[in-house]
Length: 104
Image (tube, rainbow, N blue to C red; front, side, top):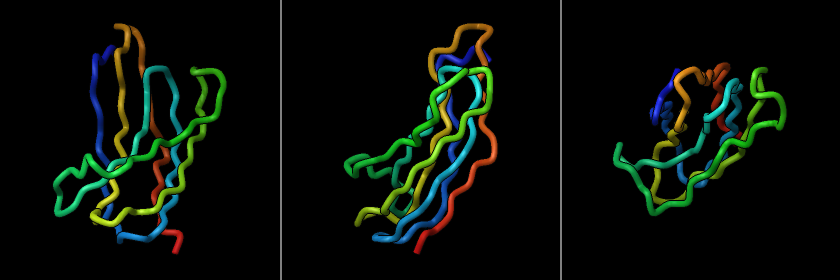
């Protein structure tokens, strides 16, 4: 609640070239769920990330979000960042039912 900027990281081992599904729910405003990559637990900012896209609708109800990603060469870990950005003092954002699974 009222966070200027904060996040929770969810990381899983990932094999370059493999595909993963990511699904979660979000409620509130000011939230985001980008996906980044690591190699040996070091950030690989030069690699293209992805973003979980959420259904449009009322910010006061749970909205589903999904992404399909392919792990790029030079990465061995998928990191989902559950973020809150520039919330007003009474604003809240919730995340629930986070799922990450291999597709192949």
